[in-house]
Length: 351
Ligand SMILES: NC(=O)C1=CN([C@@H]2O[C@H](COP(=O)(O)OP(=O)(O)OC[C@H]3O[C@@H](n4cnc5c(N)ncnc54)[C@H](OP(=O)(O)O)[C@@H]3O)[C@@H](O)[C@H]2O)C=CC1
Ligand SMILES: O=C(CO)COP(=O)(O)O
Ligand SMILES: [Zn+2]
Image (cartoon, rainbow, N blue to C red; front, side, top):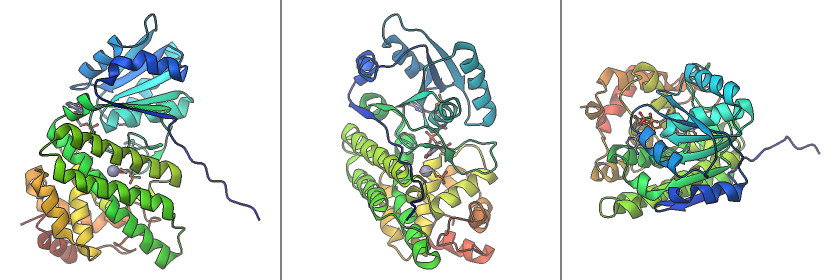
């Protein structure tokens, strides 16, 4: 019997703790990393964190820094120009989800080692071997390089703006829906369902749910709990060889909004709103999810994110077209305008 090839991409090492960026040169030597390094970071807030990383790099090593503003193909090409120039041995992504995605995508295309150094616990792309790059044929993620290592400094991550931390909770809670959708696809379409990776993704969501009870009282402990959930959700994607365990109809809604209204809203915030609405469609306790998110200050109303009602409704009606091969509760035909409006109103996403 021939078995279809299944490749599992996982990080070799996860360094997690308080003030651990001081130990970077030790970690690099343990991993046997060679320089020059290329540091990819953000243009506004994260470049200062990247400076701290530079101060702690192994003595006598050489590196270059490139700042990117967005996860677009143009920014990918900009980083690749420097790759051609300095021939780096390792790429370090120091920033939020967009920076990490660009760094891991460039690493993939150029067969370079990739080190993930997140500055905010705002997304589960920290560990995943996938990247969302604007300018490719679709808004969903594509194959990228798994990190050789993750360096997660809780001191830095817990100091990120609360909005980013809450977005990470939104992205992770979404796995409740992603896994339900996956089960549905297995039942109705005979799609392969990976029990183990599904359980891992659900465990991440449960962990993030627990985190909502702690984060207001203890931001550092709450952040380290959230990081565990984000990392293991990324591991679930790496083991599944697809984002299926981590992305269902709640993400389709998020991707649809990003197409219609690309600026100003965080990925995890949209996933959180999508989770509440899709929980209603799945017959789950959407009020419980909404209340827990509300308690941590998560914006559970579209208005709070500056999203017009029409964008929410339109996004619900087009979400099923974004990745038609991935069956979800939205079915093949999606929601009509009226049913979409009803879902958004009942769940109080719009007034
Ligand atoms: N590959 C995958 O599997 C996944 C990918 N994603 C992708 O990740 C992206 C979302 O990531 P997200 O982090 O929410 O958004 P961004 O990467 O856009 O970051 C949002 C903002 O937060 C700033 N920031 C980051 N860290 C800090 C900090 N410590 N202090 C102050 N500001 C900070 C960034 O600064 P600066 O301006 O300096 O960059 C940026 O302005 C989306 O593109 C999404 O598609 C999400 C989930 C999974
Ligand atoms: O955001 C993701 C997981 O949280 C990735 O999902 P997509 O594959 O839908 O882009
Ligand atoms: Zn996501």
